[in-house]
Length: 89
Image (cartoon, rainbow, N blue to C red; front, side, top):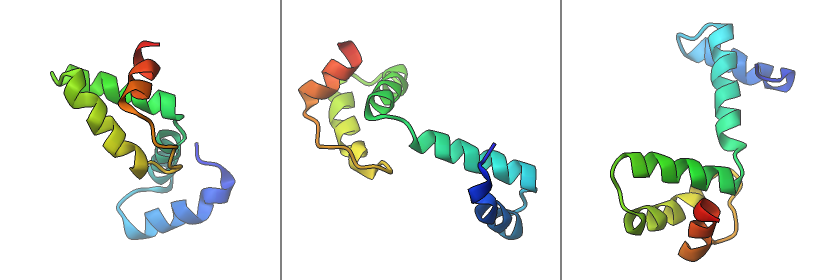
């Protein structure tokens, strides 16, 4: 569940959406979890998602590189080679 310091956000969501407090707390917890991924976790997860959609690595790694700056904590710029090393070691 969301931590107590997010009670104001949960209250805001219940006022401005059809969510009840329990649902709003779960949404907040899920969003916080999503944005707490490390760079490595994000790269591996996105690689798996895009691979399952039939994309090739030549399409996947540039796409992941373009998505990284939009993350909550912007990581240092990683080369395509560094991204491949995260996935394949």
